[in-house]
Amino acid sequence: MSVMTGKKMYMARAIAAAVLSQAGVASAMDTGSPISVDGFGTLAAVHNDNHSVSFYDADDRTDWNTDSMLGLQVKLPLLDRLSLTGQVVARGYENYDLQVEWMFLTYEAADDLYLRGGRLRIPFFMFSDSLEVGYSYPWIRLPVDVYGQLGFTTFEGADAVYSMPIGNMKLELQPFAGSTKPDYIRSGQNGRLEVSNLWGLHAVLGNDWLELHASHTEGDFDLRGIDSISGYLGGLEMAGFPAVADQFGTNNRHGTFDGLGFDANLDNFRLIGEYTRRGTDGLIANTTGWYTTLAYTYKAFTPHITFSELKTTEDFSGEILAATAMPPMLAMGTMQFAHMNKVNESSVTVGLRWDVANNTALKMEWQRINPDNDSSPLFAVRDFTYAGDPVNVYSVAVDFVF
View 1 (cartoon, helix red, strand yellow):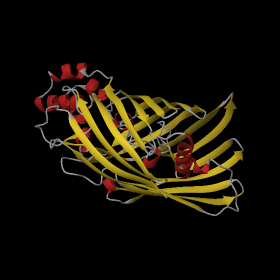
View 2: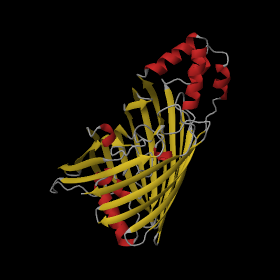
View 3: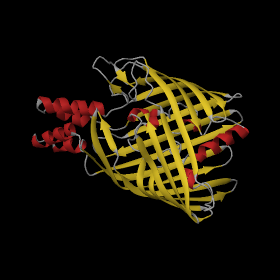
View 4: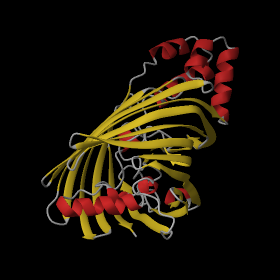
């Protein structure tokens, strides 16, 4: 959603809805309707002031690939009450290779009930449906302390979208189930994250000025194909440290993810906030993240400020203590794994959105990230000279829909 008021806000919502996954849900099917084609994109430049770190591939040289992307969505009516929706995206950080992001069938079982199956977006977050449609939200990128906690956003399976009125509000319930096998990249190594028995529920309660979101997701997962992790865990087992190997294990694990959010529009002011909690077994640590954004719209301009934080809630003191009795190489690996999985940081983001046209927005942002000295930052450390200093990220972007 755009940071606007009155008719302009509703116009932005309508435009965004045309290019989101809800396009297959938002209106009744009509086999006489033509094929609809919608697009969205971002052209962005990112620069950070610290040569020792990489912020999503952006270093101290201006990067044009981190946030730049182009997407196209097609909706094809098939039979009465049945349609096919597909979406492809080309992202700069993936060398603009085309990726099939969504491909699902939608069946209108009733006026207030839609059934979908195929490749779908997992509703982890409040802005999951518009995750890559930059025009639909105030920031250049969604707050990373919340949206950077997970390595996948789609799944293969089915969901249902049911809506009902409650007083002057509408309640929307979205149960879902399925599995996914996305690529997983950690420390420059390619692996495969296999998630099975995935299920969850997303609920939205809203009216013209307020939306409340809540979600819960669970699933079993295996992380395979990363040689350094497999070799380290095997060494722990052979050296007689099975408890540490279990703590950092990557196979036959269970994870949960919970989210709460609100989006309130009062006259020219907009207040947005989300809180998320990740709980997992094994290598991937438990975390919590939150952000709060305050925005104010004056004519075509929307300045905004965001405060956010990401914290690791898992204690690795037992594993660090065990490292004192390990052979040197295993001890070093244990300390590195404990440090790598402890991510504590906060940030403040100040930005300005200028709606230069009904379908185009120019955005500028400054973000200051403050990692704790005893933890690993969410961004990548490029060399060992980095000492936990704050990082300033400067971004300019043009978001558009068509």
